[in-house]
Amino acid sequence: MGFPDCMIDCHCHIADPQFNEDVDDVIQKAREANVKGIVAVPEFPSDFINVIAIADRYPDIILPCLGLHPVQEAKEDGKHRSVTVEEFERVVPLIEKHHGRIGGVGEVGLDFLPKFVQGENDKDAQRKVFKCQIDLAKKYDLPLNVHSRSAGKPVVAWLKEHGAEKVLLHAFDGRSAVALEGVQAGYFFSIPPCALHSPQKQKLIEVVPIDNLLLETDSPVLGPDKHIRNVPSNVVVSCDIIAKTKCMDPADVRRITSENALKLFPRLKDIIEM
Image (cartoon, rainbow, N blue to C red; front, top):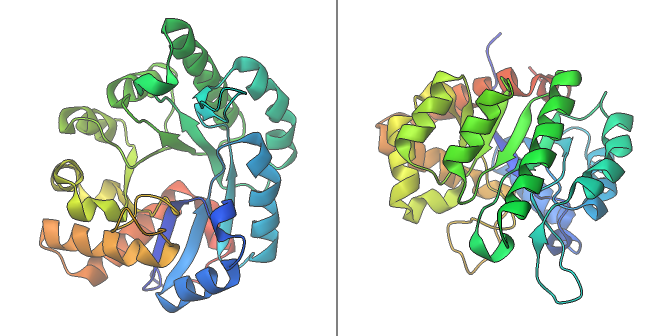
């Protein structure tokens, strides 16, 4: 039996506080849009318990991931800043406690946007935490769900240097030549709905083979309208822009990206009816 005709949102912050008031409705609309799986990722340690709780609440559609984002919550001055090794060490027991049920380690990676990086020390700390999380994923044979803002080339180089093989590069904003290095390494790239208005994302869709593409929303951000909260049902926009850019039937995009998602996140088979 082949993969069901459906879509999978491979990177979504469904446990974000922006969904606190209407998450039931958001999930229902995702189901109605033919979304059969949502890979839920946290950013901050305070998100971990919420990601697990929402996966417990909707076990037939949500696959949780756990990992520490390279940018962490604001200090007293109100500015977000780079992650520290000490912060990662504090969350290791939580990740290891749930390693048998999570779909991957994420959201992890590098973020070299100048407002989050004060100097090389911040970059070094991000690299150290990223390597630790790569090692943790390899220890438990889990894929990585990776962030790479303003750091596409360093992220791909770091992943390859440290032997990462199961990788999703979400909303990749690097150059196409760098993306193709990731393709050569067997990495996957997920496309958010904002690709509708992004020449860079459309170029990414052009150069990356369909067998290396996945769907995502990154809800509640990166939607088709940046002024409106993004939701998992908008994954259909990602599907349609891939189909249009690659001159494919949307049904084929749904099928292939879903098959790709199952290859990278095999625990999806526990929540999706085959």
